[in-house]
Image 1 (cartoon, one colour):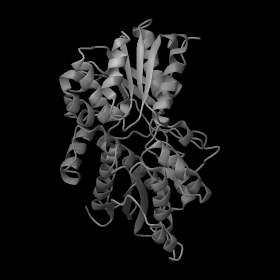
Image 2 (cartoon, one colour; image 1 turned 180 degrees about the horizontal axis):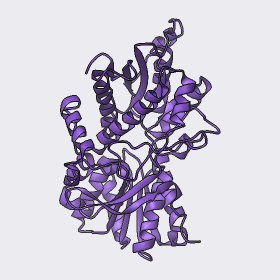
Image 3 (cartoon, helix red, strand yellow; image 1 turned 120 degrees about the vertical axis):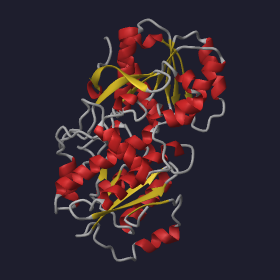
Image 4 (cartoon, helix red, strand yellow; image 1 turned 45 degrees about the horizontal axis):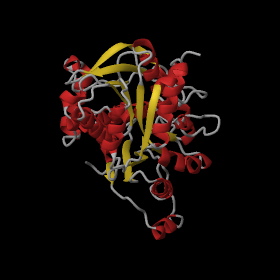
Length: 407
């Protein structure tokens, strides 16, 4: 990895160090030769499975720099490890802004950390672009005009699963195991909203902590309910344990798995591919393991990218595809900026994407924004795991407007 694009694994910034920042003379965040981009990722800790997002983004900007940069400027991608801790996220964001003089924050992972730094960045009119979270509060241009999401919302994803159940499995008993944080609560809330009157079919729901060691107990309780449908909303490593436990209990419900946990590399393969067969999820990006894409020019370029710039990455890791696509979207925004790299113009261009097609997005999934619409990706597709790859089922769905259920 070259000097222009690097990952700095720094979990904590000392208070004395932060105090010294204000004494340094700030430099221009963008120059004729360089664009500085800040980022936070959980490179360590309970959510380290998502670190591949940041690593793929760093690798993408290395590739861009090798090709001459963006409008003649090299990208300096500075990424810190916040360990998914909101307090650390705020301290590191201050460091990125006040010491590293980044032009913008891009693609930082997680809801709590992004919410923790949102006011700080908006007060200083610093773009907080394409955050790696589906929390709808991070796409509110009226209240926070400098913060923009990227992926479909968690609540919309929950409504998609509800609509699928309404269409194909009405009156079946449902159980839900959801992560006790903003992500899990949002997806579960959207799921209940989507079911409408059928929400009465949810006979048991259990919230779990990321550090919970009693996952087998939770699964046992859910099995005893006699439910035919099991909805899971959580991290991939927990999903792997849940899939293993259902198999060990000889329980075979329809398993619905949230998109963020549907990675073959970090969830399904550790659980056992054969145990994962039949699972339902959503996706808006191509599955790199699917032979259907072997002759697709974009996926062939993706594979070459992984070989050259991210050789330590796993091509089956959907987080790596996510990072690549998000970085590609930011590169498009910066290209549209031309020579005007003011923060105001960056936000103006980010809010004027018109049916932009990321190269690794599924056909029919486009990116559009406006000053009133900070939800770039609104389409998803239901997919089902066949024991080897995720296969699309049905048409592309406008997830942001998925029905709220029967009233």
